[in-house]
Length: 206
Image (cartoon, rainbow, N blue to C red; front, side):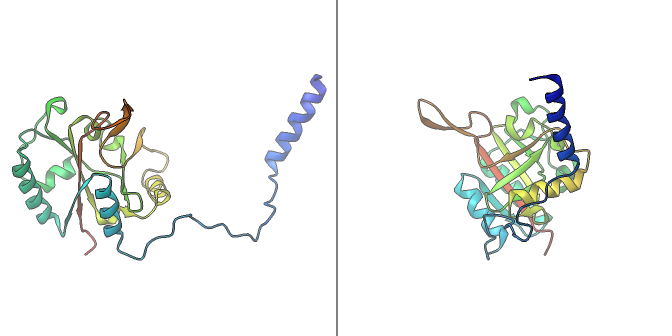
């Protein structure tokens, strides 16, 4: 191809990009999502999906019940070394003794960006740290009902609106405990992340 022909093609591409072609069917409406929201409470939808994937869900009517339920779980599970690097969570659990080494802790606590009801997923970001949600053998996510959305697309948009141009360097979608079937085609839990995942959902819209 000659330089002149190549230049003509590039010029046509540039011109097309400057003046985009209108859609062929402007009146055609496209559904926002293939998955339509269920009529039941999104808290119920999330709880069903989250527990179906092996997660453990605890609903709390307020912050006081969260503190009570978490202390009860700590005693029942026999956890001694609890890691938490986020002040908003620590403030909800006054008097709790925190362990400083993520490498040898029993459980780590983090917040999340959003919860996705349809898939039972937690949207996590590096704003809460890259390590706590994946390194400890048990991950406890603390969230509020105001963070619950129905679809992944809703969670992405909400996170973008929250941070604007200063998005965290890492945003991940966690759906249940870590699992893999790569080892002799046998399902193994906890290979690439926590073996147990808890979600405490605190009602802040009651």
